Amino acid sequence: MAAPFFSTPFQPYVYQSHQGAVVPFQILGGEAQVVQIMLKPQEKIIAKPGSMCFMSGSIEMENVLIPENEVGVWQWFFGKAVTSVIFRNPGPSDGFVGIATPSLARILPIDLAKFGGEILCQPDAFLCSVNDVKVSNALDHRARNVVPTIEVFLRQKLTGQGLAFILAGGSVAQKVLEVGEVLAVDVSCIAALNTTVNVQIKYNGPLRRAVFGGDNLVTATLTGPGIVFIQSLPFQLFSQRIAR
Image (cartoon, rainbow, N blue to C red):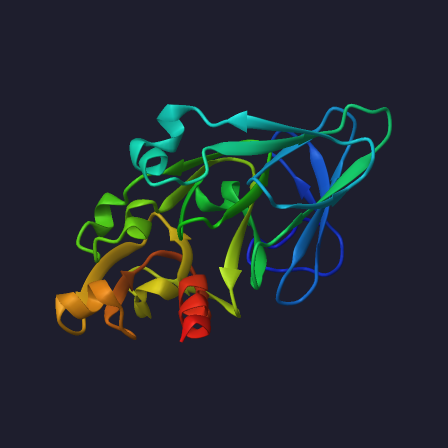
């Protein structure tokens, strides 16, 4: 049974790629989740640095530098991660890797083949991936009128036909927008969406308040068709409340 791309399952699921490869995985926990991925001999996964929680003794771990053309100049300049970690099973028997969220977040398995091979995510949403997934951190030109913070300029785009695991804070709601259907969302609550969704930005107060912080001051008007994942507690909002 293939995993629903919108679920956070507690029971084991099996992902089958378009090449026929089968990868079992299991998402554990409630608010700070861990995804356990089974690896057959010679199989590998790619994850963000510092995300490994546990792994079987047969797994090898290697840090690799992300090609500069995939990272982008802005990511290098502002100190974002420029490496990925490859977990490979070189042994004769099956192994496993447990990848954990870096904060109170849920893990969403995203089968990119079901999204036309492309999806836009919030900054730093990518956790790990299986098979054909490319992560790029480039400016979303459709949202060029958003408040010009650095996190907006580093919106993540996932492309390929593989399985990606992304992060979302708090509770997660999935909205399937029909053609022409409109949904208004606080811009920080968008965890991920289809590239087919049209995005329009609206300021609900003075621009200086939107730049320096404020509740619900920037709203995104989304027009279908497409799928949107909405998070109830974005990490930046969570950290701001702790700081207060």
